[in-house]
Image (tube, rainbow, N blue to C red; front, side):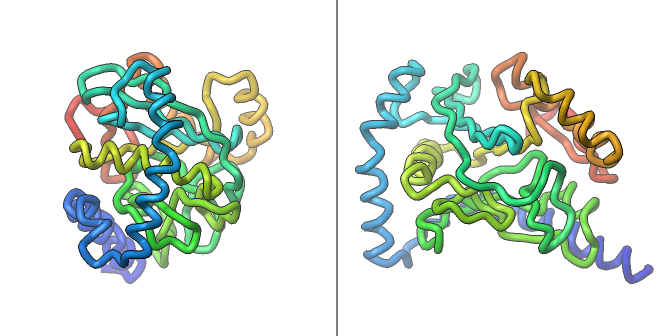
Length: 262
């Protein structure tokens, strides 16, 4: 086997392994070794945000805390939507749209370590980090299978988070105040039994007035244009159904809608 293929296979196997263990790890990510200071920080965040989250849930006419949540981020608009539902069977309703304080890089997927890109694609929260240097953070399962196949075989990058503060190196920085709400919403859903919290990251809203202008501005970036055409059906499916769609990743790294559960 050529060295390049061997390295790429290694990253793919790591991505698959991480996906398997994350189902358990996300339940243990606040673990028993959390310091009293960290417990106090998380508890303070829950207390600080309870009133606002309860009001948002009431306005959306769903239970408090929401039992199921779904995140959608839009890089061009610098917005993070959080949707909620009382169960996996009911349609999701918009709980709140948060401004993203900072998202480094440009439009287009992340392909290598150090490119400063915020990823684009379909992810899920695989760890809760109350010890973050950026107040609180939620880790994404980047690189996923698609990233491992399509990314730089010498290293597609790691450690992508939604976190506090206003500094971004490939992450979504939300400010300390807003990450407390976002963290609390995710924690409430996890504690209510949601094993995987999906996070979809798009370059922009594909049906927005500005989308054609974005495509025109990237007319020479054929790889990004093809990738965006590939992931648009995922966006459109949720717009039509208000349920996070099942998505599969093929052996060439491409995304497609799937009738099977993830």
